[in-house]
Amino acid sequence: MKIAILQCDDVLDNLQNEFVSYSFMIQRMFNAIDDTFEIDIFNCQLNEYPDDIDAHDFYITTGSRAGAYEDIDWIQQLIKFIQLLDQHQKKLIGICFGHQLIAMAKNKSVKPSPKGWGVGIAINRITATPDWMHETKSELNIIVSHKDQVSSLPDEAIVIAESDFCPYFVVQWNNNLLSIQGHPEWNTDYSKALMNERRAIIPADRIEAGINSLSLKPDNTLFTQWVLDFVKH
Image 1 (cartoon, rainbow, N blue to C red):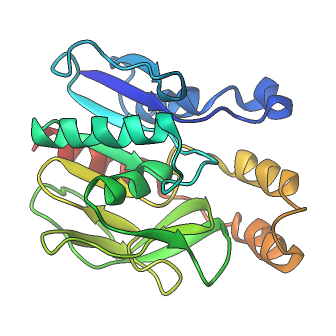
Image 2 (tube, rainbow, N blue to C red; image 1 turned 180 degrees about the vertical axis):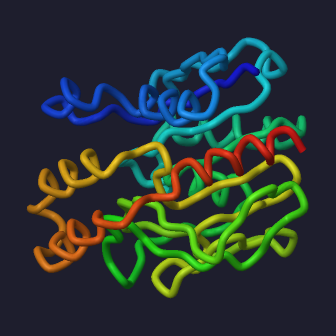
């Protein structure tokens, strides 16, 4: 199976020696289940895209510090590419920023949350189990780092996981598009390191609660299996 990673940001320079890159994290996420995937990386900030959209079995975004609603050329180009993928019924998995970009591509809204930053491990209720999903549980625990959220959905969208903090946490938009507000590719060490880097912009009590939440085990493997179930369906 061939995967195209749409890279939307880099790990902070001072964290790259330990944590490498977001594309590396996504490769590690899939390799934990199957190490035979062929993976290509396209840097969307440099407007890199595949010449043939049919050359890969599915696409997946990284997260980004950028806002999905920002009027920046590379973001607008990526939204157009997402619309192209959807038009051609190509499978796309949106992670965090990519989750929000799908909303923008669907002409829905993304806004800063009045609840502020979400960091650490978020506990979400499973609210739907589509027929492509082979394994499920009552809750999905996933690492998060965001202050923006999707704030509206089209009628055909299915909310798969939600919380009081983030009502649209995992969304199946249609038969081609699946996305998550969290980071199933991150590990707890990276989450803690990034929280410490962002102490100047995130309230101390939110950081403390986020770090304490990292004692929970994230359901990264479960969500990765969901991705593969969705892609193969």
